[in-house]
Image 1: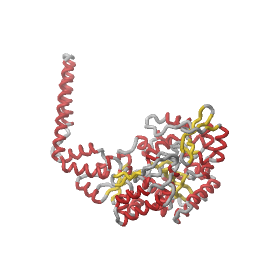
Image 2: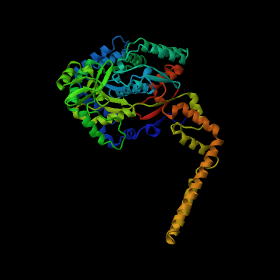
Image 3: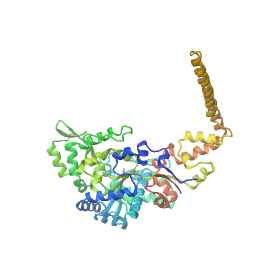
Image 4: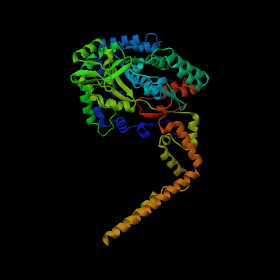
Length: 529
């Protein structure tokens, strides 16, 4: 294959706002703080260092040490947590839902992007320390988004009634899921490792948050990954001033709406609520609504006066959960963070938040698109070579690819564009003649032109159809290969689970990704296993 990567902008899988951001379009400058170049981290470091206090560092480290109780901590992670007490230590963060058994492949790519960026930054800025952080989205409540993963096209689902923050969910009934999965994956050495990993994570930990921490730590602890759960009373206490401001003044709603007005040429990712906070308990996560001079909790009988709710914030800040609009601010308040790494959809909602961050005086992070990867086997790469396919070809929409390859296979041109252009030139003379003589003749000329152009287009379609039949065998091979690499004609990383590749390739999977992925290169990597 001629290349092992293609530019994100050329892949056809990113939205206009993401492409414009990758191209450092000046129109997006007001929606971000600094573009993600290695040089721009210098000023980001200076700005964050001046704002993040030693007291906040102590609270953060104490919370992390508490969260890591009863977790086997690698020396690299232990060192990273302790280094957060130092004023020259900063975090690089990604966040992700608590998908069952990591969910789709891009869970790995997010975390590897974070780890590799910390290495890149350390090389450039050796006097600073950089800690990779995975923020567990423990307070989300959309269980249907996370209760399954795909294994070789089969959906492995956790059927359970759920309400409240998913991180607090009990794992007691996951044995049934384990038994289904176990039967699917065989008994090879790597399959047994995967079974043990699932069992140790989900059958030996009481909550989904604890299970996810164990799993992420097992996969990435040796690289120094620090896993953070924001559903923490001590960390929420740091956020109290912003919770109160949101309840009293709804500034996020005003600022985000103002920003959205400037983004009309793009699809809007999220719309703000008037109050962007939830009220949470173990089995409850509902919106806080202000109406008739009272604060009510949606779908419950709970009501509070202003004074009572503010008192509750002081006493029990853990009962207040930021939604998608406020969660980024919470993250940046409690972390000495320089950069947030996410997918295109995540960056799109972060773009809505810059003016809100400015209004509350919190440094807005650098935003970086996570690495994207297509995993291919050597056998698939060889097939592509034999079929004369480049990686760029394989990223094309299937109909376009089949059309292109049919034209290439054909011994004569199927595209009749030259003939159509020649015909139009001939009719141009007739149009001029009609206008100079009898203008009523013009309609007949137009009709005849349309008829003959339509005739050529019909012939073109018949030729294409005939050539597709002639080369059907090769075209079927192309379709089969593309369908293997792009399940349901979508990105593999959004469908497949890491386990099916780990069972085949073992530790080589993560090792090769660690070596290959370059966070600041803006390229879709093709990794051949």
